[in-house]
Image (cartoon, rainbow, N blue to C red; front, side, top):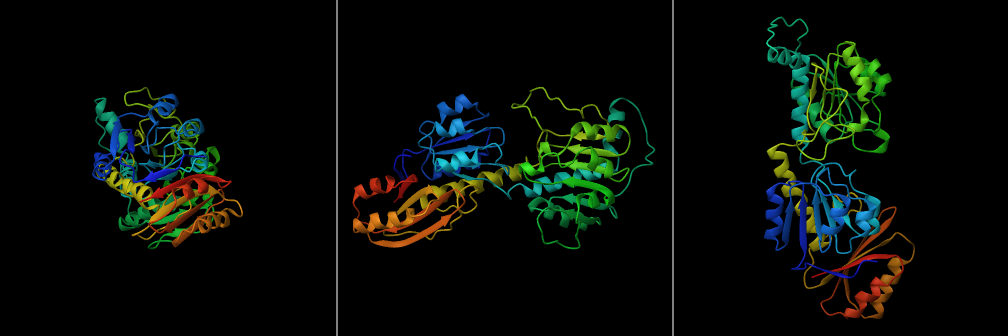
Length: 409
């Protein structure tokens, strides 16, 4: 179990890694927290050392928060992933330690959408190959294969926040939009659903992938799927590196079956700028390769830098868990003239009853109580009167199944 914590704590520390936008550090300092910043990601052993005494950790996509790291911490209360994905975090280990995790699922949507549109235009106009020829000193003005996006069919694999917004903008450019998603999604505008991935691949002039990092999405675009695509189509992946078989993609590009491709994410990516990069797609003139920068615009990073700290501060100072990726989501009212007791526990029968019985035996006046559970954990917020016995907090911590107790003032 984690020691009893009281928040806000003037000695609480925030550690931000991987060049998170300055707006984040500014917000935490304004709230009264001490902030340390590290420009790069840290190794497992480095994290174990640096996390001692840290209350809030902010990371991006390269920092790997393993079970070993999480089990080495005691004071960590919350983690902010200043990005969309959370695959780099062992969420189960976080839940078991009572550490809430928040991300930024919407903040860089527009940036990724604009990059996808730009890639479509460049590829369908054969710009990457023309650019390569000119850099080699070869003038080739004829453009028999260049086409417009208008009137072409766009196939979107994954119709979430990014896919849906891309659908709207692409339709504004005159494209016919079709999409495929394993979940039933409401079509925006005139977009039409495809009932199978093969149907989408066989009929689309442009295929772009926008799925999440769920294990079920690994390898969804392989040799079979690429062979089903229309001859002369283009392929774009700005989502996750593991969804596409890059060797198979190279084969269909070299054979001329596909006109071109744009890839921003890779199964294995270098940890630092300037590191060597290897890929089967290197050297192909009809391929745009970018280093995982789909959401890396000034606007997106500033949006993320302001969005995530607010979620972390709401959790730490109010107990609110809205948009947490591993805690039950609770939107809580303001609490005044009272204390707020946060109790995180394993989702087992009888714990709430024991918690309330303990408070009743101590004569505590409960002014409000909120409960939400997930498959693994329960999250109980109890507002109590100003006067209470300190020993009751320790007793709550001793209830079997308790993971963490916090008292908010």
